[in-house]
Length: 435
Ligand SMILES: Nc1ncnc2c1ncn2[C@@H]1O[C@H](COP(=O)(O)OP(=O)(O)OP(=O)(O)O)[C@@H](O)[C@H]1O
Ligand SMILES: [Mg+2]
Figure 1 (cartoon, rainbow, N blue to C red):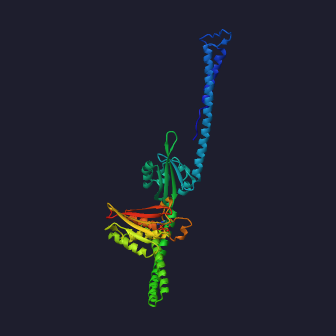
Figure 2 (cartoon, rainbow, N blue to C red; figure 1 turned 90 degrees about the vertical axis):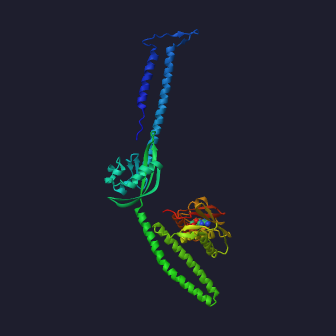
Figure 3 (cartoon, rainbow, N blue to C red; figure 1 turned 120 degrees about the vertical axis):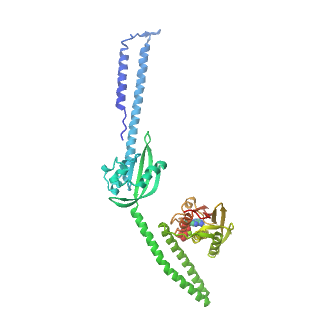
């Protein structure tokens, strides 16, 4: 893009004007009016009004020329800046490793980077100025992409991580992650679209393989652990009969470690099921308070330091998967115990409002910063820092809990203050929801 500046035209016009005025001033004669010099009383010559006018005009032309020169030099600077900015933008587009397209508002390609040409096996001549959908035998005419560019983008101006799968003629089946943004450019605010295309086919395949591996490994681990657990129980009974209390205590510790291992394997299996959309729910109406009370009782046994108190609204029945919701409660409560090593109180509350029940588990432990509160429900997210290294875990519990609640059409959240404690809550519709 070049900025045309009217330097030459303007200087010639002002120069000509100046020449005419100079000539008239020098002669002081106009073909129509004869010039007279007026002498003042002191004898000093005074100029006629015409000469004065001409002098003023000359000054004005001088000023205009200066002004014009200033404008011209500013235009030159702007021109340079535009060139620098354009080169800068070009360099960014060329440097980006992923394919990137610049489109105009009619979806014609203004430019594409090397990565685009390499990844999608198209040539520059067959790309620039073409309609996106016409590229490479119309292989970019993808219905989902049309919806994205023609409906969603004009409304939102930016699109993040939109997944599109497509079978391309030359490069085969691809899964792409699209990010797009509209830019308003120039005084007439013409729209440009920046479209970044990330090929995530390989990454997705690797993820799938990893999930399959974790799933198979977890399954295979479950069987021997079940047998070891059975042997532990037999040993426990024998030691008890023989009155060997020290050994009974050791075997009980072994048994509780086996429970932890089983729950860990269960979490890994759940993750792979969630990722593959294979997690199944067995839903029915059940007594919610009973579930809460049973879970409290069970977890109270695992801690001597904490006293778990309950403030439950009576008679709550919920439609959902009792075991899975129990899993959520267990996770909230084990976290409350684990992350409040110096506190001695945990409170479990329920509140019923219209058609929803809300359950909160409050602890007075290490608490969470604002930033961590926003991320604890992410997969594998664990708070960093020297203190955290001492708490065991995979960072899966809350992610699984959030997925279970989501599937029950509910929501989860946390309120917390660092060093003061946290309150983890979920809220659920109590009645059956339409799928
Ligand atoms: N009650 C709490 N107080 C403070 N931090 C918490 C609390 N609950 C969870 N967290 C933080 O959130 C992170 C994620 O919790 P999550 O339950 O998902 O994983 P985890 O407890 O580390 O491991 P696991 O997979 O065994 O549950 C934890 O590592 C911890 O840093
Ligand atoms: Mg946990």
